[in-house]
Image (cartoon, rainbow, N blue to C red; front, side):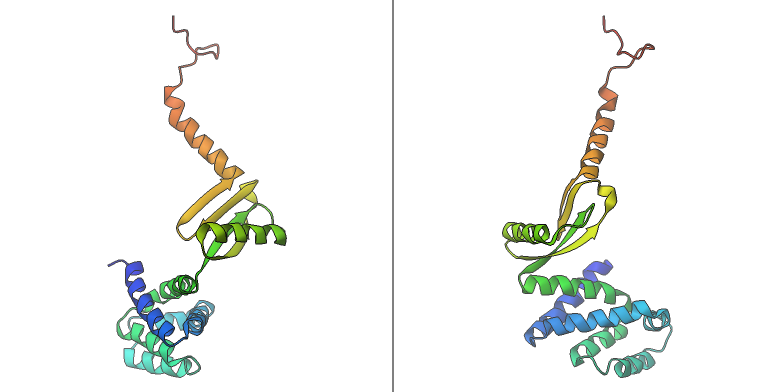
Length: 195
């Protein structure tokens, strides 16, 4: 089974328990902190993900290191170790954000523009997207100068490319696809005489 699908099962179970305890935000935050610690410290990451380190020793060290986390998060991370699923922790952390957003009736919109949007325009765009998607949209803006103009918006798996560079790329693909149907040019640069 692909890693994403395996992670999805673990995420769904963890989120169900967190939501039942009213600790969705806390669980997501603590899991994020654990993943951030792994990303900051290559030695810690190597220790956590190593398949050769004794599992009991690893569990004991994690229980101590995670003493400040909730019992749910501690037990979940230890469960991943017991099941030899350490490598999915980052996927689970990402999926937990999606589950929390869905639970809270919100979604994140990845917005790319060639230059920063003024706050009023960004707020108006978020309101329009919220009306379209029937949920509260939280915009996350990334400046991409190569877009030349326009905007690219992604909400979940929906992708809208209204950028100048996107339109130019679409035109390029269209021209290349239809190039073989153009009449051949003669040596003087004009289309061949069909007579």
